[in-house]
Length: 350
Ligand code: GDP
Ligand code: ZN
View 1 (cartoon, protein in one colour):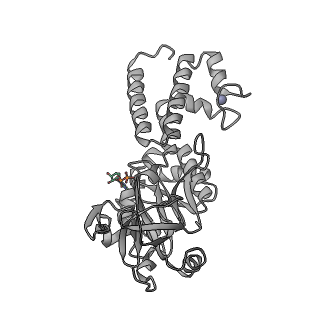
View 2: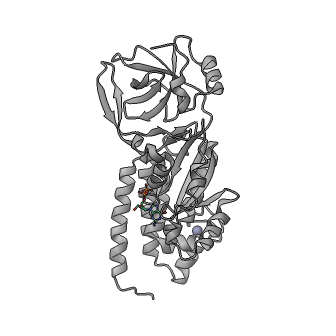
View 3: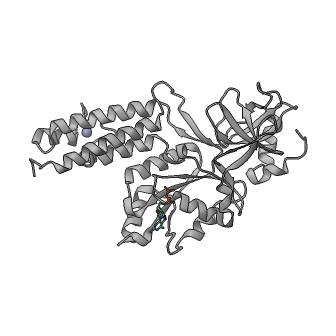
C-alpha cells in the first residue's frame, strides 16, 4: 500500500478531522480507509488505492466507519485493525439478547426520512425520526409523490405537526418540485442515508442525487487479495456535488420499522384504538386508561382479534429480536393473507 496522502479518500469524506482522528487512534504502520460495504464474513474498504475486500477484526465495523487497515489478513487480504471513534451511529436499539443494539451505519450526517403522500404512516415517520435523532445525525423529511395528492398541503401540515421542527421538503419526481432542494443538501464531507418503506421513492431520489452519475450505482469491481476482480452491489456511492450516499436494504427499513408497520397493516382497527390509550407504549394488559381493553369490555373489539394481535406482536418481536428481516417479511405476508380472508368474511358486528 502507498503512504501517499489519501486524496482518493477525499470524496468519501476524508478531511482534517478524520486525519487527526486517524493519527491519534491508528497505529503508525496502518493505512486509513472507509467501510463501503459489510458482508457476513468480509467488509469492503476503500483506501487510497481502491476498494478491497478485507478481513474484519473485532469490533465488527459497520458501513460508514473510518478504519485502519494493514496487510496481513488471514487469506493475504487487508485486515481491519481498528475502527475509529464514530461521530454518529444509526442503529437499532438494543433489546433482548443484544442489548448493545446493532449498528446499521456510522458517521452519518443527514438522514432523509422519505414518506410517500399516497401512504403516510405517521407512526413510522416518528420512529424513523427518533432513530435519526438517536444516531446523532440530522433528519430531514422528504415527502414524495405530491403529484398524486388531492390535498398535498393538508398532508404536509399533518406530517410537519408530527415531525417537531424537522424540515419537510415536498417533492414530486414527476413535476420536479422540490428535487433541487433535496439535491442541494448533501455537501462535501456529508454522509447521507435514505430511510423509508419500500416504494416510497428512495431509488428515485437516489437517482436524482446521483444525477448524470446514476451509473455509479452499478456493480463495483473489487480486487481480492490475488488481484482478481469480483463484482458486488454498491452500498455506498460518492455524489457528484460532494458527499456520500449510503443505501442498503437493511438500513432502509431499520428492521424494527417493518415490525411496527406490519402490525398497523394487519390490525388497523387495534392500532386505531391503541392511539386512544393513555400511555403511548401501552401493552394493553394492565395499564390504566387502556382504550383497547375498554373496547373489548364494550364489545367493540372481538377478544379473539386482540389475541391475534398479541400473537403477531410476539412473533414479529421475535423475528425482530433475532434480526431476521426475511422472517419479519414472511410473518407479514402470512398476516396480510389472513387479513384478506377476514375482510372477505361477513362482519358480524357492523
Ligand atoms: P423505493 O422502493 O423507495 O426505492 O421507491 P422507488 O424510487 O423505486 O419508487 C417506487 C415507485 O414510485 C416507482 O414506480 C416510481 O416511479 C414511483 N415514484 C417515485 N417518485 C414519484 C413521484 O414523485 N411521483 C409519482 N407519481 N411517482 C413516483
Ligand atoms: Zn392500551
